[in-house]
Image (cartoon, rainbow, N blue to C red; front, top):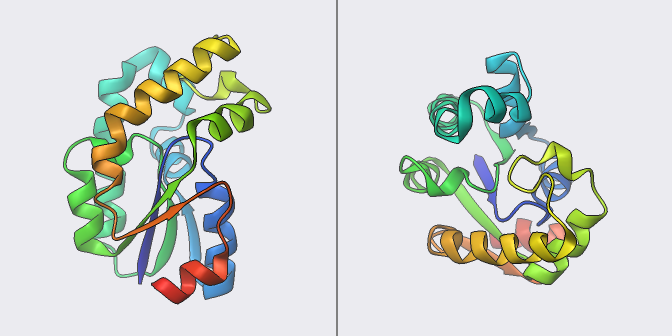
Length: 166
C-alpha cells in the first residue's frame, strides 16, 4: 500500500505521516528529504542555485521512482508536488491520496512558529505577507488537492479516522 499525504506547507503532512506509518507498520518517506538525498543539497540550496523549475523536475523524478517501487509506504509530499508534471494523477494511480485541508489562518499561525528560512516560498516574508502568500498558493493549488481520494478538513486529524477511511 502506498499512501500520499498532500496539502499546504504547515498542514501537518509530516507529523500525520509519521504517526500513520507507525500505526500501519509502514515505512515513512518525506519526499523533500529524498530530494535532498538525491541532489546532495538542501531544498533551499536547490531553489537558490537551480531555481524552482529544476526543483520541480527533480521532485517529479524522485516521486516517480517511489511510485514505481514495490514497497509500501506513507509519504509526506511537498506542498507543491501535486501541482506539477501530472504528479497528482501519478499518485492517484499508484496508491491512496489524502488531502489535509487545514484553514489558511491556522497554517499561517503554525508556520509563524517555524523557521521560515527553511521554506523557500515563505522565506523573508512578514506575517501579513505570509498570510497573503498562503491564501494565494492555496487558491492556485486547491484544484489539484481536491483530486485526492480522501479529504480531511479542519485543524486536526485523527489517525484512526484516516485508517478507517482507507
